[in-house]
Image 1 (cartoon, rainbow, N blue to C red):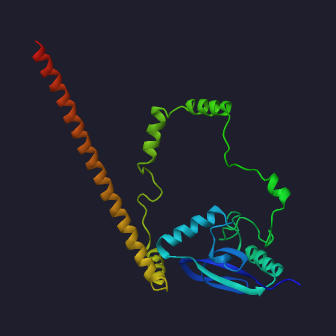
Image 2: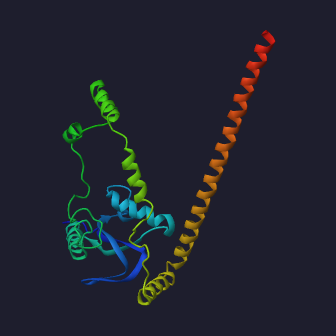
Image 3: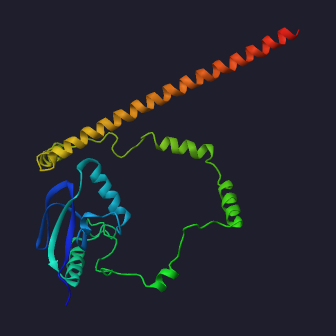
Length: 250
């Protein structure tokens, strides 16, 4: 008899409050991942997850602390947890297939809890520890890197023009009053949500980060100018010493 120790869970984005209804399930924030697990699986997303999920979690953690985690069903069998996971992913839809908002990279239901490698599998598993390229491979890599041609003057000019914002999509465009009101209402709803305080702190931290970067750049440029002045001073001192030595010899 299967043990009923599994659950199906969802990650919600605290930055996107609203009313999200998918079949019998309603969310106060936009869901972005559906998973199945047991124990502390849903609270330890560092292992076994896709890179898109980790990037999203890192962005949320930077200003909001943690994503919202809810367990949709608990104390169920692994088969039931997988079935619910597959059903929810299908209902909400995967983003990579342009069917929804989930960043799941599979349709769910795959894998087996408690999977253990056999000794044969361990022996045949490819290993990269201590791996070194052969001299021939190193030579080919070096040759390939040397043959990469730098951008021509025309290419650099085009790239430069492209970054100047000419004929940009938003250039000269203005929002109408209705759109402005929708934006205002959306922001008010976000700031008045349970995570509004976190959002205000996030904006403040973002502004502080920008200020710190600007100060760091000024300090770096100042240090460069100071170092350049020191080098010039040492250069002229050495020239004066050489002239003085030649005068003494004559």
